[in-house]
Image (cartoon, rainbow, N blue to C red):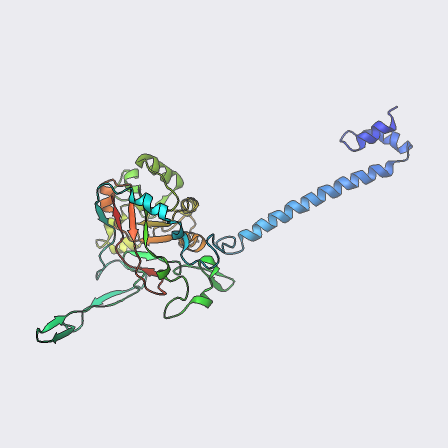
Length: 361
């Protein structure tokens, strides 16, 4: 007959058998068996509840906003209005300057002109009233012309998207970068926060990813979604890498349609999908640009999400976007690493800026 001591030892393991039950019942400790078994059940139940609660918390956080968990305050503080350009340190500027070997400049901006592709109902009109607008004045009879421009000036042509451009609606409140509420900073005469004047001068290392060359075509099909595998493949082929504080530009060849087939140009465009955009954001870059109107693939990976890449870049990470760039000469000369420079117009309270960014080789 098994000893009671041995059976008690088995009671706390998985080896309790019929003989032990008899032995222990004779010893009058069946109550202990029931207690241990009940304790095991209680422990398992508590563990189950804990796992379930943790899962529900994760799900709740993921659904906290339409674009995932709460993203503010930013890593640069609750009052920051500059976003990822904070990564352009003096050391980063010096690193970029060291890339200049030939002194060749590439203009990346397109002409602002009547008839250029315009998204939606946006407009661009330049007029010179008077002809001449002023004069003649003085004995020297000087005359002068001045133009008048009517446009969504920060969102036409080659355009640089600021952090006040795109947000997300959460429970009826429109939330932008760093948790700023449009109801608190919006103003018909210019944004009180996140205006383009906060960006400052951008002078940093740029990397060109030539999607068209990588795919062996002049122009990638509209709507083609650039993957992480594409990006790593291009980096390997071009023998470059992506570093913190960089600007990353995509040449797709779609820009060949500019002023030639505006309707097709505006109907969609190739670019990185949301998966690739998230991968880029993790590299801690400062800006993404392209020779398309949307920069990201249009339509993207999730057909029920509209330009979600803009939200991930601008709203969640403070990473700026440069649209409608002319990257043809950079791609032609196979310039994959360069200085990228741009100074947005200091339009106080504006959502974006026109301008002519340039690269230096």
